[in-house]
Image (cartoon, rainbow, N blue to C red):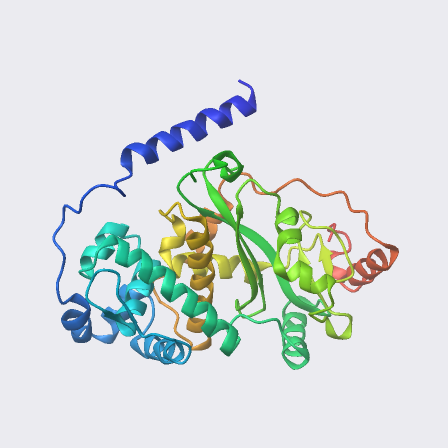
Length: 359
């Protein structure tokens, strides 16, 4: 059977499954749990809170304080009694941390689905403001870049690396428009999360929402960081660079063909193990999908910064899931300038163990 026909058949089956299983427009059939946030959560032991909310109460309070620092109106009211900011953040963190259905989350917190959607939108926008103010996900400036480079050198003997770049698929329901562009090479609907991270699995830049069928380098060219690099708005001190696989084009700031990206693979695995909603985002709202993914990345960084990592995340299992399906995208033809080629050769020659291993 022709590969394109096979892909179309699989995509049609996926759409049909979502159509018959989707209950987004049905009336709520389960009873709302009045007082869960107000009465049950405060009685949880610390380990219970961390298990359910995927972060400790201390980290949640730190995050709540930061959100209060950027809010304009600390309550939301959409035809319902006002919801305070504590509960709004609680709803969002719970939603991202669990695979509970959207309706179930709304019922758990005794709100309507429309209020729950508005709460997610509102809280994600606040988290983006928190990130901008406190630079939770931020490009490393000179001092931090030097520390990253030194740590990576001690681990991998590569001089000058300040980050690793790659993309990962975030599964979604079939969008209402242009759905086939979101059908990826692993045969499910998705958007791409592009991440750049340091040696500690902290994201230094993320970009989310491009259709899942797009090549990693095409996503990179669309991203804010690509524009900022070309506009000289971000620096690579001391001739430093980031590394990626052969899905990217060689340039003076991006060295390709190296496999020293284990921290980024683990960052993606930890992110999806920590905030399990990223295993399938059930909304068809593409703008909310992008905000939810970036918000999860912000929470990921906050948890690492607070040394708040769950013990029950099987990162090896998450890594196996990441490896499922086709492993590599099409290798791009490398039409790099001479300076970039010479720079890469110098790096390869500085790695004696890899000289005969097609670094």
